[in-house]
Image (cartoon, rainbow, N blue to C red):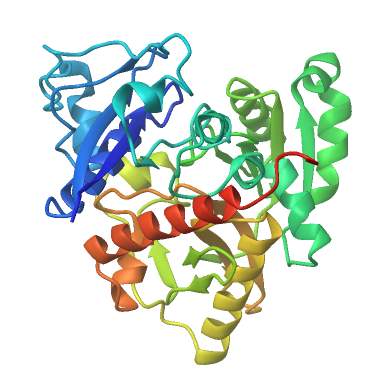
Length: 370
């Protein structure tokens, strides 16, 4: 049987570049060499696309982050044969025609990769790709748009306000009065970023001002959310196209006050609990809401849905959908599917099959009236 040529895109221009290197390394390690020919495609922080002579090796984001300052050699990415990817004249999408890919696996997190931009390029190139399409990717990245989609489906969410950067610059006082109705504590987040980059917890007005200022450095839109009291962090993986399925839920016990970037990737004190120690009824609710959130953004292929569970009241809130969840050593997406009976190599097989099936179905659509 002819091997499928799988291009794995990773890196990127966002603040999640290092996390993406670790995710890609895990994907490469779980691609069956008997079935696939893996092609590493790296996007450097300056936006340059290159074909490295070897894929990344470190699956721990903490190790990648620690090694980042030591250069590419420390990350085990040899660059002696790097070549810039440029579209060939007359080619269909340059990227695909030039490299000859059968399917693409985007393992890139954050803006300029997880937000529909790379997905749009792959749509133009007419190549199958793993994961959500342009609309779902963009909606899943933009937390403000995501919350509108959730609200339209009646999904339970925390109360929130959206702050625009120009409004903040124009009148900090007015913005603080507006978001003040939410009470304290508050979580402040850039609307378009992941991996908890730029997120702060504000306990009072002074911290709130600093938190909004920080988040506005990363995005023109900032989300301010009412904190769930004494919250537990519950997660659930979703897999599928038209008939998505949910995994067993998991729980993260963070090493810090909340599951921020350092708690995720820098220190090793956070503890994953799979399956989550919750009741059968609550497990069923989490799984149903995970599928509901996935459908709300018109998801395809995969996603991880994150929840906040109020410890005292037992009220469950949908927090967000991650359309390209992390595949690092601490990544919950693959771990929850493994606990559900689908090991990592088989999960990769399933994701590639879903990508090809979805692409095949799109090829059957009419593109003209004649």
